[in-house]
Image (cartoon, rainbow, N blue to C red; front, top):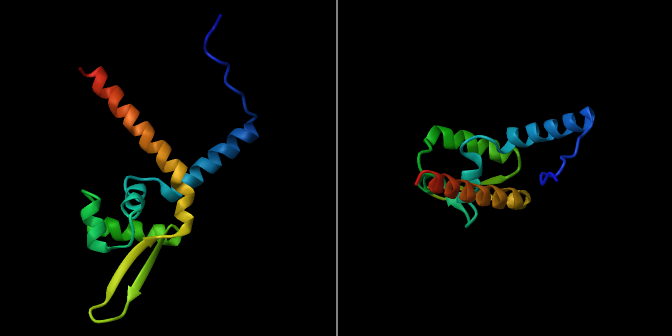
Amino acid sequence: MNTIEAKQVHSPAACNGKLNALGDALYVIGGKWKLRIIIALQDGKKRFNEIQRTVPGISARVLSHELKELELNGFVRRMVYTESPVVIEYELTGYSDTLEQVLDSLVSWGEMHREKLRVERQ
């Protein structure tokens, strides 16, 4: 008896729907930096340089661009305090909580994959 379960077959319309939804998700949170920035902000408000120090390897130009996109998509709030000197802080919005399961799953998978590679290379 075959121990591999049969995979569910989807109609072309259902497949296209899933591909479109995945494309939308990757457009909004995909890339090397966006999820890292979100994780960096999970412990509270941070100023630009604090975020840059927390996310190793990200340039100021890229961080600025990614923060603008995250703000545009409702994940990050930019707050400007006009006292002297002007202070700008970034924080996560409530909408970013919708990514909690995604982040948890990706972190778990990443840990499992890293361990798999470590074991295979011994």
